Image (cartoon, rainbow, N blue to C red; front, top):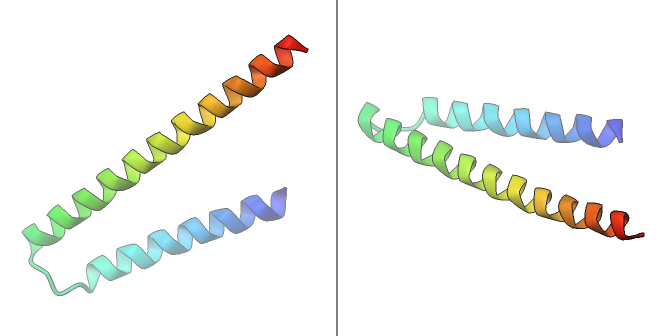
Length: 69
Protein backbone atom coordinates (compact mmCIF):
# COMPACT_ATOMS: atom_id res chain seq x y z
CA UNK A 1 0.00 0.00 0.00
CA UNK A 2 2.88 2.35 0.76
CA UNK A 3 4.33 1.89 -2.72
CA UNK A 4 1.00 2.76 -4.32
CA UNK A 5 0.52 5.92 -2.25
CA UNK A 6 4.13 6.96 -2.89
CA UNK A 7 3.64 6.44 -6.62
CA UNK A 8 0.38 8.41 -6.66
CA UNK A 9 1.95 11.23 -4.65
CA UNK A 10 4.89 11.39 -7.04
CA UNK A 11 2.60 11.35 -10.04
CA UNK A 12 0.47 14.15 -8.62
CA UNK A 13 3.48 16.29 -7.76
CA UNK A 14 4.98 15.69 -11.20
CA UNK A 15 1.73 16.66 -12.90
CA UNK A 16 1.42 19.83 -10.84
CA UNK A 17 5.04 20.77 -11.53
CA UNK A 18 4.58 20.16 -15.25
CA UNK A 19 1.39 22.20 -15.30
CA UNK A 20 3.06 25.08 -13.46
CA UNK A 21 6.01 25.08 -15.87
CA UNK A 22 3.70 24.94 -18.87
CA UNK A 23 1.82 27.97 -17.55
CA UNK A 24 5.01 29.89 -16.92
CA UNK A 25 6.32 29.32 -20.44
CA UNK A 26 2.97 29.67 -22.24
CA UNK A 27 2.80 32.42 -24.87
CA UNK A 28 -0.25 34.19 -23.41
CA UNK A 29 -0.99 37.55 -21.84
CA UNK A 30 -1.24 37.92 -18.08
CA UNK A 31 -5.03 38.34 -18.03
CA UNK A 32 -5.56 35.43 -20.41
CA UNK A 33 -3.20 33.25 -18.38
CA UNK A 34 -4.98 34.20 -15.15
CA UNK A 35 -8.34 33.26 -16.64
CA UNK A 36 -7.06 29.93 -17.92
CA UNK A 37 -5.41 29.17 -14.60
CA UNK A 38 -8.57 30.05 -12.67
CA UNK A 39 -10.66 27.84 -14.97
CA UNK A 40 -8.18 24.99 -14.59
CA UNK A 41 -8.24 25.19 -10.78
CA UNK A 42 -12.05 25.48 -10.74
CA UNK A 43 -12.31 22.34 -12.87
CA UNK A 44 -9.78 20.56 -10.69
CA UNK A 45 -11.69 21.56 -7.54
CA UNK A 46 -15.05 20.41 -9.00
CA UNK A 47 -13.55 17.08 -10.03
CA UNK A 48 -12.08 16.59 -6.55
CA UNK A 49 -15.43 17.38 -4.94
CA UNK A 50 -17.25 14.95 -7.23
CA UNK A 51 -14.69 12.23 -6.52
CA UNK A 52 -15.00 12.83 -2.77
CA UNK A 53 -18.80 12.72 -2.91
CA UNK A 54 -18.70 9.52 -4.95
CA UNK A 55 -16.26 7.84 -2.55
CA UNK A 56 -18.30 8.99 0.44
CA UNK A 57 -21.47 7.47 -1.03
CA UNK A 58 -19.62 4.24 -1.74
CA UNK A 59 -18.24 4.07 1.80
CA UNK A 60 -21.66 4.83 3.30
CA UNK A 61 -23.15 1.95 1.31
CA UNK A 62 -20.41 -0.37 2.53
CA UNK A 63 -21.01 0.77 6.11
CA UNK A 64 -24.75 0.08 5.83
CA UNK A 65 -24.02 -3.35 4.40
CA UNK A 66 -21.69 -4.12 7.30
CA UNK A 67 -24.27 -2.90 9.83
CA UNK A 68 -26.88 -5.26 8.36
CA UNK A 69 -24.61 -8.31 8.79
